[in-house]
Amino acid sequence: MIFELQQYNDLAFFLLRLVMAIIFAYHALPKLKSATTMSQAMAMPAGMIFMLGAVELLSSLGMLIGLYIQIAALLLAIVMIGAIYFKVMKWGVPFFAMDKIGWEFDLILLAASVFLFVHGGGAIGIQ
Image (tube, rainbow, N blue to C red; front, side, top):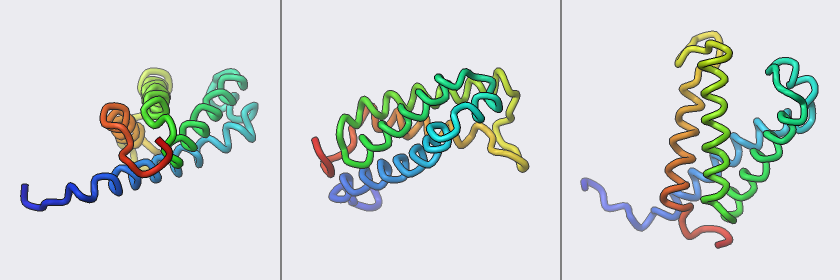
């Protein structure tokens, strides 16, 4: 290795968890507030949209405080697999597009979720 930075592993894990918590909470709140409106746009039942928002928000809180990180990461990975499936198979969203968010954003969130599922979330937080 060029740089010896292992002493910062826990901080790096915490920063990854913090960023994921912010992103998923930000995307969860509209689902919880306007599930009916979003269900029409996404062609999914409102109850499913609300449940999706609840999973995202609860998993975000787990990521933030460091509680059940691997379970939260697994749930978020499942959410992202579903998001990629819908974007690619149902809505025909390209990997990258200048006029909308492609599924490259979902793919990096899936990769981060899988990483935290496999490695855990580090020592910072409630264990």
